[in-house]
Image (cartoon, rainbow, N blue to C red; front, side, top):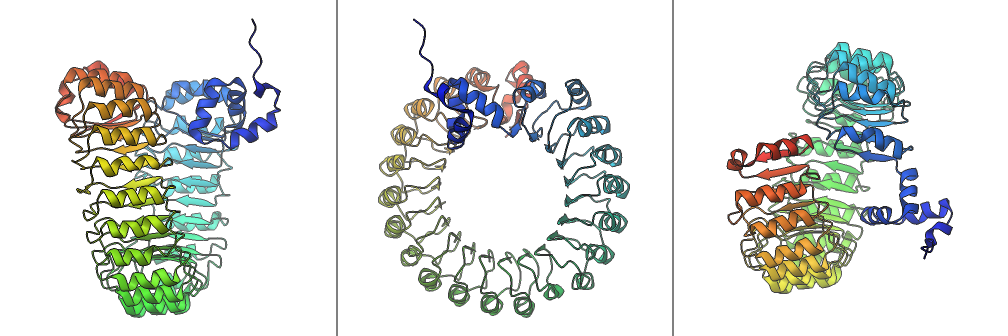
Length: 604
């Protein structure tokens, strides 16, 4: 009896594309494996792909004719010969090409790729230690390039940069971070020939004020990153005063004459020596600032932050991490003046207490992200005030040891929109607090409760209510057993990251449940766990999407068990962490197989 046609076969291609667009990535993969219609739609609509083995590339390019973005950064065998073999299949319409860390690729292969990819606009060759002037000349064949990233190409000099600049004059974005051979001469030519530049990164270069003089002539520049350029001083920044009319975002390592850039909207000066007077001068001049980062800046106190808050009332992002002299007075001023604040980072601001958090609860109704990591002045009363920020999406409370179940009840009852919660080493709360979070914050997709020593199976089992959870860290929870892990595996079907390091009391029953239910796991840490040979083999064979695994100090696993488990998943592993002595005990055939498939092994 012939099979009845699928109901999907009566839908038009446009309707199928619309339906396909509503599916999340895991569902798309399932549907295209079981439906010819969705497989066809996927082939026609996919625009980007990242591949592990270059020998599959010709077939993939044939199956996906509309690809515009190609990532080859994890192909271990990508070299000139492999690229030359690809050339026989004809040109492709790739616009974005990622070749970062493709250290075996040289000038001949790069030129072939540049000619092969018609309409190439974006290229990333970062961390290619063999990328030098010859390779730059080969890349310049792609005259339509608009974005080039060459971070840490240590062999690139002014000569190579000149070849790219002369061949690709339409560049709008270029990154030269850590290209130590680039000097003022190369930057000057870049600025003269590429007038359409909108984004430029010259961080860690040995350029001088002369380069800043040239950069100031760029009429369309919007983003300038020049972190740790030791030869640039205040005089160099003065050149930007009358130039760069479009400049909106700057990253620096010092702050003095930045007051001249009155149109700035974003400024990152993390780690710089900043005085209150310079911060006051900055805020009074650059009143349009919406995002500013002064983390780890020596000299930032309440005086500077209060002035910043009063002058820059449109602030949306403020990073004060590790500014140890900031107190509640500054936080209160920020909360009262900057009513549109969305992100506030206060990591290691030890003088913050419930008084500052009270102001945040009263005035910062738009707050979406709050980082209070290592703020040991935070207590349950402070969390009660924070819970009034009902639009919170991300909350970090790691190392806040003075919070208990009572504080967790406040968060769980009022912060229902939370997506991420970090409670790393918050040892003061227990099962009841975790249950309150699980009941009230049903949208959580990221939860960190590592080293929260009071937690047991009773609390961890409540996590199964978090159906959207994808990232879970349970490291160091020695009171949970296989029963707790089984409950999590059964309820959290979307988990793709799981850290179980030093969960020593989880037995095989938990790992069997994980193997059966957690089919979406991509990354898992099992170091110091009590998993057996059989359970490990079942895990590695059943977790069909796992790509990153840590397997150090598994005392119950034998060499043979490790061998069988790794063979079961070697085709899909990209990163692997193993106990160092196994380097000499595992078969050379297995290790060669893992290397050939692009797996990076770290021996611990």
